[in-house]
Amino acid sequence: MNLEGKKVIITGAAMGIGFATAKMLLKEGCIVTVWDLNEKELLNAKNEFEKISNKFFLYVADVTDRKRINELVEQAIKDMGSIDILINNAGFVKKGNLIENSFEVWDKTIDINLTSMIYIIHSVLPKMYEKNFGHIVNISSASGLLGVAGLSVYAATKWAVWGLTESMRFETMNANKNIKWTSIHPSYLAKGLFEGAKLNFLGNLIVPLVKSHDVIAKAIVEDALKKEKYCVRRPRSLRLAIILRGLLPDFLFQKIVLLMGVHNSMNQFKGREN
Image (cartoon, rainbow, N blue to C red; front, side):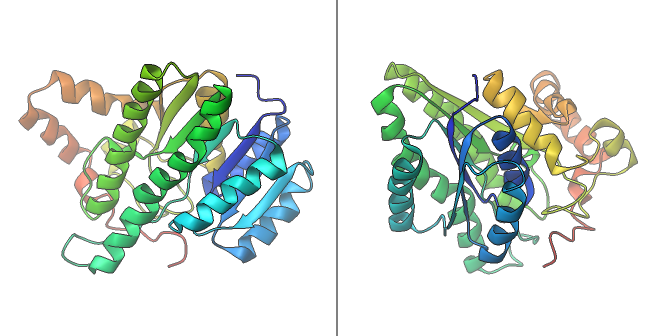
């Protein structure tokens, strides 16, 4: 896809992957609408975006509020004229084994990471159908490929995002609509939402930490949008999770996962502040 002039919505884009992606797309000549719940960080993002372009719009948004989402989609049409690209990036994580956290935490995890994505796609997709063009990028995770202790509900939502993305690709194919779909699967980032989480020495040799949010932003812009790839993983060695799971007996695959320290990888998790 040629990105010049394309109209984009990015959720959760005042910080992290969404912020880095917004900056790259502005440099590509896109018109970008950013949604985020954090008003203070939106103002900080505005100052950075203005150094690149004035073709952006910022809105405070709770992505779990379906009425607000519908309003903001209509606002995006007014602001930009249409929606060519949707990047569902907003996410929430809280460490804890299943029985350690409250149902309120798990409800929030599911609502932000999965249910809100369904809301937004449901609102945006008809607009793309009208002009028979669009690309929707959904942020999944490496934990959408492997189960991780201390991340069970989060991982469940990210496995669901992968399944949702693939299923929707087939739905739009069946409808003969020119809509592209990509799921993005980042491993642990050295800084930000997953700071402190890491594999052991062997695991880190095979699947090293992602150095910065820019690495994932570049994967979204270059691989997902420009090259229209279906499933993008960073680091690329994450594809071994799929290959080995398919080739090896289950017990042997699980032993390799344990040897890499996946089961203990959240032990030193700090996250972004709290």
